[in-house]
Image (spheres, rainbow, N blue to C red):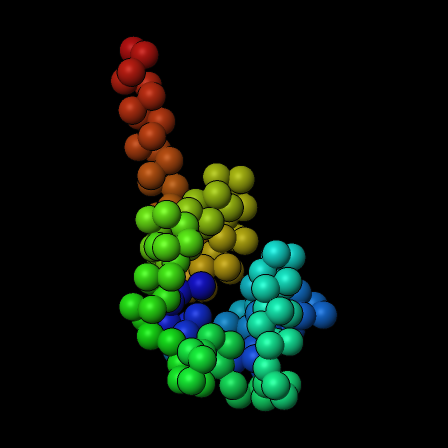
Length: 138
């Protein structure tokens, strides 16, 4: 998900039982995105760390003092954990993977794009890679 959506994510949007998270768009659209098991484990650990169970309106990512995290905090943390990737890099890499698997509709839904044309843009990088490989051998 985009960094802004991650920062605004509340516990009420996380459904551990269904392994899904609800992402709300600016235009009042909603989409469910699957949560991988390792992320579910981290969320469960985070939820247990609360003295009292978090309310549905409490943000998932908060600092020790209870204040929400900032965009720069998220970006620094992701870079530190990943080596050098940004949240946007990770999002694009995952969408590229889904598109490469010929699952354009899934990528479209996960990305929250309004049209398949927007999602098809991820195929452009793959076409460029094929051209480079072709030119390398011919």
